[in-house]
Image 1 (tube, rainbow, N blue to C red):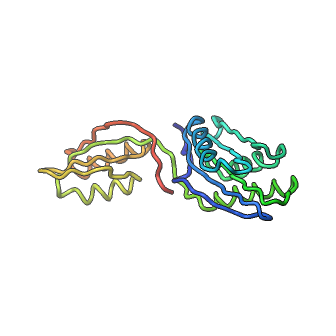
Image 2: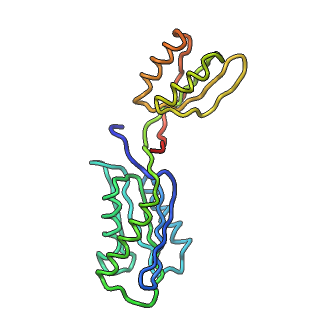
Image 3: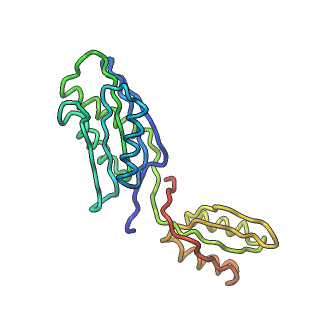
Length: 211
């Protein structure tokens, strides 16, 4: 996977009121079109009595990006497109948003709708914490107790996270190391342990690291 994708760290929600209409923006990370669609369906089930549930999502990033939006019954071009534009301007990938609208009795007009959906999108993005989606190598390594603190500091320095530690005669550590840092991590661990601590790769997976 080339380059790092910036994604939402966790689900978030924001609400604004525009001329008595309530706009509830729900945002969540989605690593595939299927995940985005199931998130949209979940929000529609949560707010079945809403006037509109307007969705937009961006999956991937750069040249391999897939995006989607719908006006969900609002006048064409007044809701889904502005919402998607805000998403694309955020620099986030693998993100889905649904803006739920409860009509407040006053028509906003096309310009008013564009502004309201744009503001709702911006409100939820302002609360969104970012993470890096990167390829991680889960490694296992046996360490003598004397090296434990230094190995922990080395892991932190390489952007790695300790997933588990088991204490017996030695310490068995399971560590998630960003793939691009694995070479540096192994070299410095070998230096630290005079070659005795050799990490064994258990699996490769995608993970989110807070930024």
